[in-house]
Length: 168
Length: 168
DNA sequence: AGAAACTTTCAATAGTTTTTGAAAGTAGAA
DNA sequence: TTCTACTTTCAAAAACTATTGAAAGTTTCT
Image (cartoon, rainbow over all chains, first blue to last red; front, side, top):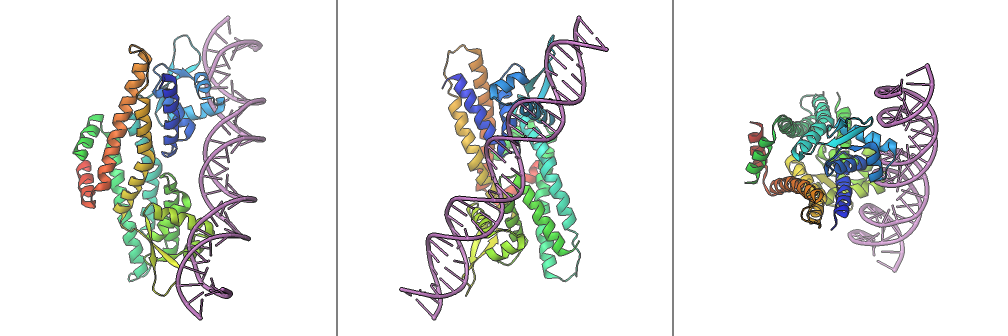
């Protein structure tokens, strides 16, 4: 495979992977384009390379900056902004995890906490069963939340050591 | 909060959480309804409870069966089918992980493998950089894949011991 | 201040995914 | 075999999400 074809293929595939990760297609494509491009790209470069509109490019670049997966970089003597991706894949994973923890785990934990306080007669079978189920889910999601919290606070060595232990 | 309100709230929230997990809203709602309902429910029961059409119910119940999160259960003397959810939340996590590994990690690994064989002059800087990046991503996704593989093959004790170690 | 070089916004449009419900299919009972 | 009680399918509609591009906004330079 030629370099251009390989880049194209990677960008497209990373784009569809993103879709399953709460990251939209364009956002993931911009990210992957920046991942495999050493030098900073301008909005124009990205628009041309991915054949997307200015508005779309702008919106998704900002989303990537929001997720801390991309940062602005100014070039001496240039007025426009350039963008570079976080290249350390462990950092990328960490930031995606942090963002998803905030957007998904934390809200569901709040709901679980609320519904666990369901009121009613003490001897009601149904209430007891409901509480039991909610409490098991709370326990599980809570553990997941604690692990992701730990991960977002640790360095890459912790991660690799951990993975090695798990696989061993 | 009253039991009915709590159930409703849980079903709605689990529904929106599902959306971020490759599970559509209705599918996640049916799953959560079955999770908090001890007795098997028929398609009619599910339709009435979630106010959805027959087609929608049928389609998503089948998807849940496909993911092995729900199973059919026949009731003596009844001609229609009833459904119950897998109630062990660790099993649920394991099955969702197995399904996502298959749908997301495996395809991207295949693409990474392909694009890593990019051809061109040995001393081309760009090719070397591209290969380096792809290889780092391959390494990372490969580790993730190995961990999820291990998880889907292990029992719940492995999981809880592991989580405890990670959090400790 | 005014012009040029950019970036951001947003209403309209396009594209995708989900949902509906009526019709077709299937299987048990009589 | 025919009736009946169900399940499945699928084309059309609705709902949702992403994209465009022109206009408005901002910043920098002279």
